[in-house]
Length: 316
Length: 210
Picture 1 (cartoon, rainbow over the protein chains, first blue to last red):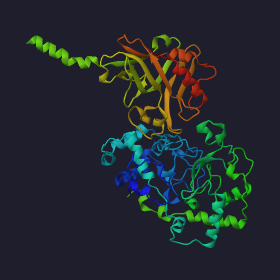
Picture 2 (picture 1 turned 90 degrees about the horizontal axis):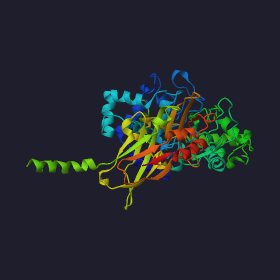
Picture 3 (picture 1 turned 30 degrees about the horizontal axis):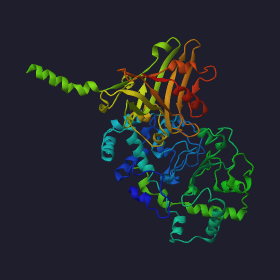
Picture 4 (picture 1 turned 180 degrees about the horizontal axis):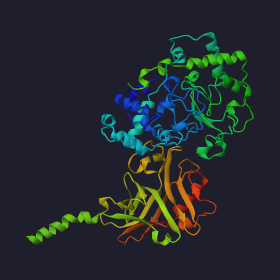
């Protein structure tokens, strides 16, 4: 794995992540992987990053509308996938985090997640012979600092690249789509691609898809960060890569099945909902069969060589 | 011989004695009958000095975290090249500029461990003061920060002084800043937004340079 490898996916836009500030090395990747899977990062040593970001489900928390941290404390949002993060310009559902290298401070400190402090984590890694030697190899200093700790975690998370789904293989002319998948692709291009834009199937933007507010959370999304009224109820437009496996869906995990999501956009969405994205104001005319075709296409975004890549799994 | 050595010693010590310091202080004595201050921590960034008859001189990598708990942070050593030249103006940023706010993870005074960083809404807290108003027992916490327009809060301040004076002091009039706030209405600012902008504007008028 090298920095260049990320930059050389043909036809893909240039990554947002600045690899010059944190050149990816094999040792750095392995150090980040070790940290990612280490429950000692949490205050009571029970939870690692992987608890809410499981590889086989696109690094999200399968079957959990919202995730729970230490002592079963519950959060308020669905755990986001960790896929192709090098192309994201902001992180979290509200985009509150402006750089991948500062993201991991959040789960470490959040009372409903790891409820720990950066100083405690640094103390722990600096007390460990194994980590000291790894930090020396990667950063030339056996004493970890906030900066080397965070950049090590990024070396792993930024390497979680999914670019070998059936869709990608079809684009490269290696496989063919079924007729249903082809019909689904056409429908996708017409109704979905303007926000979930190929090849990343996301946008680095915020939009409201008209979901009524969940009164249990009263989550105003981007407004909570920007304090600009027009940002109310807007959330980051997430990637749809591996969407077949990343259920439940939406920022609060309110939909369990992909067909519920498609049905929502096709039949239930209130086109006059406040703050609704302009792109959603015209009705999508999707028959039952159309909806099935669309789902068949969405399943071509599954990338088994990503979900089952042993390099991304629990370190040996 | 001894005399020569003495002169040589004097000469060799000269560059050291020429090193200038900028003292930073706040009106601790004036405010102590009215306020108890538990936390006072703020950034001064991008310091520039105007040397009489010369151009502006910008300090390199200029970031200073001033912290009530760290006495040494209230003195800034000026670069040697200043020598004895008289400084008649200073210009600085209260807080952290927007480029630094999006630069990712940083060490030193900008290390998030210093308690001046918001993780959930990435960005630095420019100025933090926590304490109690003694007459009404009102507790207050003002954390001023935010770099995204329209609520950006770092403020550039430029101040002149009498260049003849030997010691150089940058003074924060904290009592005035706190007196100006309506503590019946607003005892807490913990997020970027309109209030942080308003307080940052007021704060920028509460420095003096002498």
